[in-house]
Amino acid sequence: MNIRTQLLKEHSKNNSKIIAEYIGENKQKVEELVELFLSNEYRVSQRSSMVFSLISDKYPDSLTPYIGRLVGVLCNKETVESVLRVTVRFFQFYKIPEELEGIVLERCYELLKDIEKGVAIRSFSIAVIYNISEPYSELKKELKLVLEDLFVEDSPGLKSRRNAYLKRLEAF
Image (tube, one colour):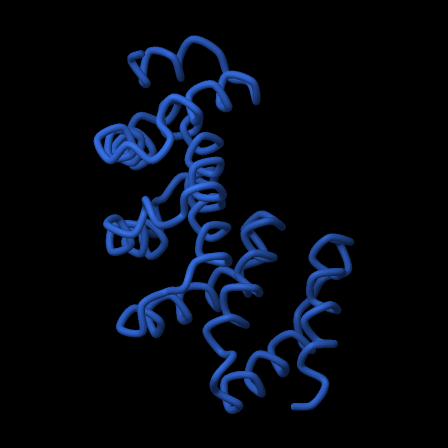
């Protein structure tokens, strides 16, 4: 199967599942998917987002060699919304290497506070920030303050996520 051709053939959940099953944990195929996901071709990167999500859910360790590049994508202010959303979503479930935590933490705070960003990106950012802050009480206190001041009235989803994490942070 040519992954790029299959991505462009149809944009559907079923097609994404077929491609994800084909890729599995195969290193070369995962590498090809990552290249497509990070490509500058809007339609290709957009359509590969769902496949990337499926692979990251089922085989997160297969993406370990690409963590540095994914942090780069996260920090790039020009990253396409769908790619950014899937990247932040991935980081909420992945243990970020300690040497990259500061960069990811700072960028996720920027995303969280940016009312122009989508609800999913902002919600996933809360989880990433919380996970990085877990061992550091001073970072948890900072997150609690930010969440208490976060404007969420227009978004039930973001409000729910904020409230759930505020509950976790009650002791701080």
